[in-house]
Amino acid sequence: MLIDTHAHLTDACYGGADDLIAAMKTDGLDKIITVGYDLASSRAGLAIAAAHRDVYCAVGVHPSNAQALEADIFDALLSLTQAEKAVAVGEIGLDYHYDDTDRDKQLRWLNRQLDVVAACGLPVCFHVRDAYEDTQRALDARGADIRGGAVMHCFSGSKETALHYADRGYYISFAGAVTFKNANKFPEIIRALPLDRILVETDAPYLSPHPFRGETNYPKRVALTAQKIAEILGKDFEEIAALTRQNAYRAFPKMRP
Image: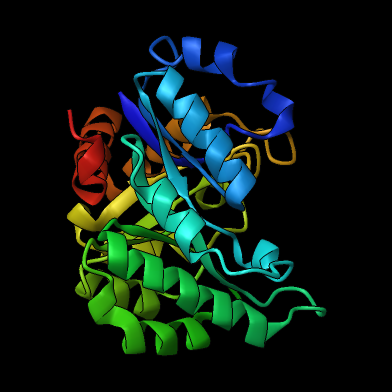
């Protein structure tokens, strides 16, 4: 059984996700963490989690969505972290991929959400795209506030960056991109990481793995990512499933059975 540590079950394509969740055991899924990208999706994710035993939620504002914020979110977000099924703050971070990115605003809201992390003590799920240097500076300045640990979601950086975060005790989470035919850097990164730092996810409905690249993704396809990691490491699928499941329970203590 696998744990999909990062999916977006609130996406409209899932129609409430009831059917998807009902099929979890058949699909080989132990737990799913549905992840917020703004306050509305965080609240909706918590509602889904509250209604389903094996679904949990991360609450936060994605850096791209943070650019639209006008009012302070500290109190609202801190309140959401107190929910029984809230296991992390996320996804938060920096995304400099697009030309119209307001970097100063993203940094300001990243730091404000790290204030929430400091106040609640939950783990934090970081989204980082084309922004590893500024993320590094932010975490160097605020590292003491990340008491509950961290996950580098959908990791896309270098081996050196992965090892740096693993040395800090952070988890490195891999999604469907590791299965892509042009994903040449991932085997070296995965082989270099300590086994107890590796997580798997889908980022569903995005980043569907090969051979479904470009299609709507589903949490059950986390098995394809786990299978690829098993191949890279020369291990059995069942061993990687058990390993990443136990890593997920350590990374998100409120989710432990």
